[in-house]
Image: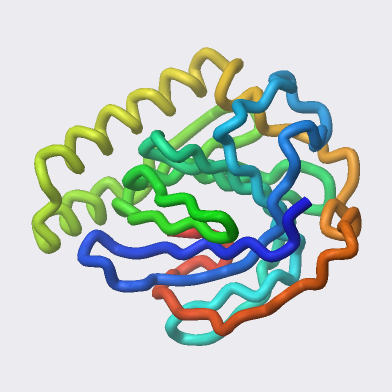
Length: 204
């Protein structure tokens, strides 16, 4: 497990919204009762235990829930699954531009469009108005607008199927101490930036 992995979220105009650090999980790590056990080699899974410092523009706040984040270098979305202890609360699917992945960090542009998915796979599109406002205000390109809409449709279809993409998300984790299964590599903390957010447990 990589113990020092930074995520940076930016707005379309490249303003930094936030930085946080997580633990990159090995591809072979089983999280819990997920139905899809084969993880694509390009999938970045991050474990953020409750209490992880989240650096917003107003203050640094601890993450209230355990969280597993999923990123793919060529996809226009990211998944953030939140857990009360070991039990799934909900998953936020955020529409983003494909992230830039480096050795120990990942940067992405948030397009301000989200899908909330409950454990029973009921779902709701969030921030549609915010997306349209940001698209006009920040001048989203045609590629960004189309990419966002295609990504949202892909996510909704995946929810309705109930397998595949959302099969990666366990409803019950097998443990909550993934971060303790570390190698002897020391944890190196670096200065963090800030972002603006309403809900401390939402990454967009």
